[in-house]
Length: 343
Image 1 (cartoon, rainbow, N blue to C red):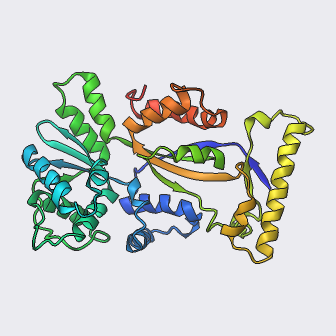
Image 2 (image 1 turned 180 degrees about the vertical axis):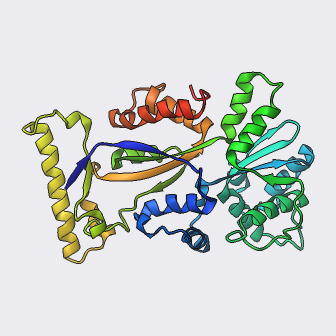
Image 3 (image 1 turned 45 degrees about the horizontal axis):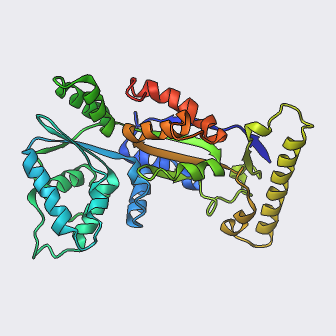
């Protein structure tokens, strides 16, 4: 049995390809980071997409500048929502994750998964009866050109002169400069729609259950279905998060000993069940909320502001003490990463 304190780690995209970034996040679920090599990322992400396991590609956001007419873009997306994917009844669910700022050019951001879902929606239609709108075709073709290894090969992939995919930093810098004639607070609000942050929280399962309630976010979490804690990679131990309110600093503390004993019993019974032939997804039934988990969250700054308001600042009521324990340090780092946009 191992006992650790919770912590967080900001995950930067710098120095990684989109595929490497997605692989780093996806392997957290299976704790298979040891399988990462110099050329494993594309194969790993292709495997995710072939199984339509799109939750991991949500963490990578596509940022593109559109130089055509704003009216044409909005008309094309509206036609897509009302006609092309009307059969699925999910158009608003797809497009509500697309963030758009219109000024001289139009700036568009969305999780990569959005574009896969758009293709799936179009697949339910008869394109001979309702041809794909040219702007939507050009946008999806641009994504296809940028991600040829994984994106469905079902578009013309013609010259996409009106759309340009950009790195997030360059995209946000260009947008901020283009909004030079807008009040500072409005400029910051627009940037917050497009600027994303990804963070790893190492916490207990009780805290992670609260985190996943933030539905606009993307999540990747260590899986107790697939992680077998009897294996050598885990050192033959189960790791638990120490609740700070039980940590009195004294080994003979009755509350700490009661908590520690319950975790030791849970660990022992988990290994017993595995020994009887139970699978990890069955044996996990005896594990408590104090079980350590790793959960990665990605969202834009607008949503992060909402999260820290609730989970660190307590604007709607006192946060759970263990939630505040991990969120307050992340909130302080976020203020710096957002250059003060997050208050």
